[in-house]
Image 1 (spheres, rainbow, N blue to C red):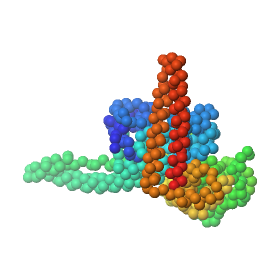
Image 2 (cartoon, rainbow, N blue to C red; image 1 turned 120 degrees about the vertical axis):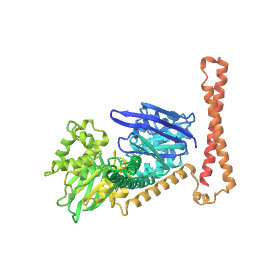
Image 3 (spheres, rainbow, N blue to C red; image 1 turned 45 degrees about the horizontal axis):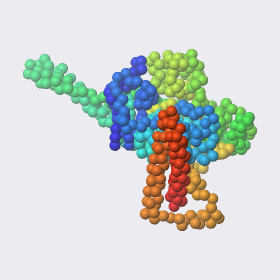
Length: 596
């Protein structure tokens, strides 16, 4: 283990907010660290400081000479019309065979390598960025909310990549399931300090709760002891016979100190309106078709959702989950068929884009009063605002100065002040921290109305969903099992796809009896080790020849005469031919290993 990146006695302030107050931490090249903290605690700022995009007010960032830092870029790094393979080669400087090999790890099919990157969906573009990241051979990765808007399959590929990655990672995420599957250490940033814990996020939160409980018991005992000492001192200080004892007790009292309870920060509390439980069907669709005039997303949708169900909508990105939700909440007209809500259904909606269309010049207080149901008192509005951390001066803030996380909380607060018995929620956990997502899940589990929602957060889906609807390949159907079963099936499909891709790449077109022959092509341990040695030796030869080519190409043209230039041209041609032969040899050995 080698420390490759350190933060020493760091200070960083924004206005009145102190993000780092003498904070320190060290990141080695072999640990996967999950960075957690409340919204606004400074997680993204810390990432920017490590990347060199932001300066400390005081303190130091120490970078080892061995550090090869990689980060998942959130912006678009692609050139106009650039293909996937073209981008990977330009960005990494690696040969085509190496780019293709890494692209395969993220299930980028051969046909996609020649497509323009910008024509791909956001999930596929993320896979391309991850492939480019790996081609740079980093030994420490920094990933800030890498799962945002990634579908389940892409998240699983990212997990597999991170688990197999031999370097270190610093990962910011609100998704507990993702952190648990990828990180073996947890780093919390809170009140300007950082705490490293040698365990995953679940173990850390359990340990934190136990420490809080222990510290609270210690404080209770201390307060009891303090009260006893104060009583004794008050009774005996004026008595000549007991005055010395009183002075001794006063010294004991001075030494009594309360323990600072770690992690005691203001937390969000969600309390959805109390509704009367109902029976029967809340939503029924008959031969429903959804989509747009130029594109049908799904047809012949036959669904029934009963009152009291909490239905998770699942499916890959681009399949139509949001289109389905927009259709059932009347923001998009059906293309065909029928859609009917049950009698007395009062539908409340939280959409991904809602917080970007809020009235900019209203204050938080104005918005909440406008959204609240008739008969809501001023105190009830204040209580809901306070439960979502809009207290003091914050309640008079203009919406235009609120952060994305604050806007998301404001929309949720508006829902809490209404009397809905049906909630439609599109990615409600985005922009919330780990504790807030947990609080939202708890509240929805207590809610006695109907919930129809989608989320990329597996822990949240597992906690909340009592039923699953899958949007896939032009259909929207009730999934016959629970969410955990859906995750299991998706993982198996992904693994089967990887195996199929191996077979496709590794096996040339053979005769009709190829399958029967392939079963007998098994290698012994010695033969397999020999092939592995040959593969590594071939890779070293290719790397050496590539270095020779770079050395020749790096010489300035005006430094050599025509005869030498001709010799260099012949050398480059010879090297290129040798590299091509070695790459063919590498592929043959690789295929032989895969077939076996």
